[in-house]
Figure 1 (cartoon, rainbow, N blue to C red):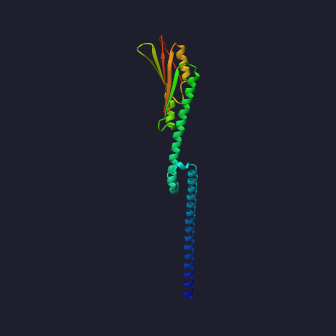
Figure 2: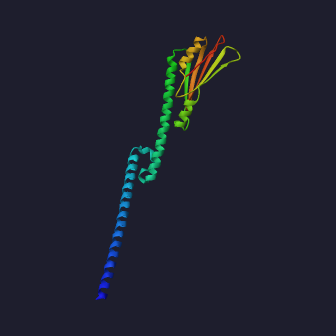
Length: 208
């Protein structure tokens, strides 16, 4: 009789342990399935984003669109974005040159004018912009040995350009005869050069 009760108790204990083990294993299995599902959705989302990004890039910028991997698509997109940025910087430089040239012509003087634009690599960073803004303008007045020639060289940032037609006006009011004026845009700086004839000494002061 006691033997039967002992056997029954042992069987019940083993059943409880087996049930607990199955329950624990089932919980771990469910957690693993959930993690796999989250990872699957993440990969699908990334794939969808890459496809959307690739659709925005013109086909001529792809080397071989049919055989490209997801990483290849990201690399091509990065290259395309870099080229777009360089193009934007170039257009900004040209616009600045056009505006400056229009301002020079608006002065109405008889001096001939010319403009040159040089695009530097890496232009457009925030650090370069801040450095250019902080740089003070430079004014260099050069008298030639013959005493009748005067060159004025100005350097400013693109963000704070000189009004060249106003500079020309000041020189003419002081008695200078302007021969020609030109400027060039190099990176974030503008270099102006004004050649003139003078018949008496005078002092000038300019500010952008």
